[in-house]
Amino acid sequence: MTGRTVAAVIPNWNKAEMLAQVLADLSAQTHPLQKILVVDNASSDDSGAAADRAGVQVIRLERNHGFAYAVNRGIEQCATDWVLILNNDVRLGPEWLATLVAAAVESDAWFATGKLLSAAHANTIDGTYDAVSRAGTAWRCGNGMADGPIWSKARRVAMIPLTAALVRRELFDRIGLLDEAFESYLEDVDFGLRCAAANYTGVYTPAAVAHHAGSATLGTWHNSTVRRIARNQVLLTRKHFRSAPWWPIVAGQLLWGLVAARHGAGFAWIVGKLEGLRMTRVEACSNWATLGPAIRSSEAELRRLQQASGFDLYWKLYFAVVRS
Image (cartoon, rainbow, N blue to C red; front, top):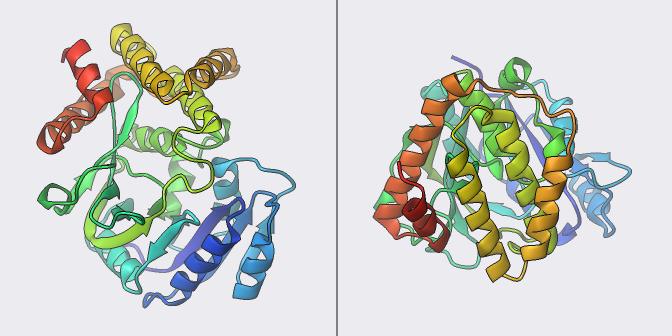
């Protein structure tokens, strides 16, 4: 059974007030933290000063490299049993970390996450664990759904969002750091697929409840957000879906583009797809014969949860078009 020492890594780009709040929350945790690292992506506000006032270590980057690069620079500075990866727009109660660590250690998990509720709507799920479809499109399970019993059951999981996640430090030595080609968005899904391919699993513990502002920096359907997600969907499929059936990939990603267009971001989706197709040095990471069953299982879980909680428009269209 692994130990319980924890270092926190907070990638940050602007939002100094939110950063100060999450640092205050970390200082109030009942479970001690050996180190708190803020990796600042060249913020234009006083984020660095806010971190300095809180007395935590700050790594100042010369430009905005994105989420994955910033997190990796923080992980490299950690020598604890666990690394806590935490967005700057998450609010935590004082027992949150203690609850998460206990669940991870007692279940002998490689990673752990809790229930994230919307900061704006306390009875709405922001996220739980992740699921991915055969299209290479992913769902943060429960996002936008009403909280309820379906989201209140602890369980073993294959993938988790890195919004507020606890990961064994050793796991990064075994399967590698986050893929910096993703910059921001879906880098945690890629990490989860690498974990699944190597049979490393984690735990979802809903007793660890936090609140998340969600897309506080840019916004869910901001053109930059859509462009990066569209690009990274292509990167994800190029890494993990080679030799996979082509129809779900084409249909699912086109449908996602239609939803983006409905939100006024259709051109950003096109730009992102072209960027993903032009990316070089993308090497296949997983054998579909090995990983395919895990992805099909994840899609089946995704469909079950959508049926139980009420289909989102995208997933309703996807499952109508792409048969099992």
